Length: 428
Image (cartoon, rainbow, N blue to C red; front, side, top):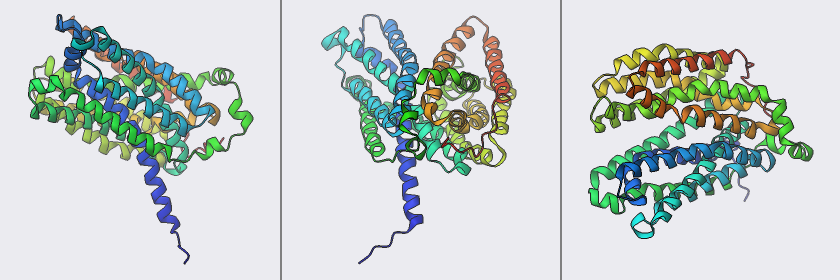
């Protein structure tokens, strides 16, 4: 008996497989960063000396920063793999390495058991995760952009920040549940390890899913000589595009860290708003963010990428000061401020994965995006929380706010330098 295969059903199944394999790996990366920040006090008390708790927390945060330093190296390493061996291989190795890092943290022996080796284990694990995370974004967004139908590439690109934000929400909510259900003694003893072990399992699942994906037609269509062509001459040739990636990213990464990452902590520590209330305000705002992403992605497929990028950068710049002034002493102010800002931030976040991929040729699409993007995020995004806090402590908060708006204007100006890439064929 002959089995008749419905082409449309098979196509939908392949699409779901692609989106799930790409999205879950990206979610795991963002989840890892969220849970490290959430469980910093517990990590500090278990993997560092308890003789000086303040120094232990600072050391834990310093190792968090090490992950940012490793990102550009990961962008280069996995970018090279993606452009030489394949996007699928790069994605699979990146999520596997991230899973290994989570497992190492989850099973790391305590400082009381092995002394400084506990701290060293954490350092190595974060270096591994930093490398993996530096390679994850360029690999996954290149893969996604190349497999997406060109008339829907803007919509498909929204999966990067949608899945990433879902990962942050999952990590945040898991942290809240554990803190509510476990005693302080249980959290210190073993509870803080649970999220990292969960991350390791999720990473393993993502690795299995990605190993079953097909390589992109754009990469498969390259000749052997094109895949073996020297990387550096091509990077030099496309240095303008690399600079454009930095210019488009600089405003987005700083404003996203301010409102998408740091705002709840700032509200709790500086404005003394209840931590539980700031958590739920953040959850509400991030749900608004997820809902806004496909709107902007679809719009970019209709009216073009440049108009949407301008809306994101200029809208964020215009609304930053009013939303900052709104935030005073209440969780509802935080929820409104974050939601409004994240709606405009979503305009750029939704489509930059597609825009970046559309700027480069197939032969250096992964590394061409990965290196400048990772450097920009490390230099500007990674330092934004520290710079905001430092300037705030010396009474110069408005200086930081002006800095953020200026960077948004820089990103808006860089939009003038890029061609309209909507519907571009990525097989060339």
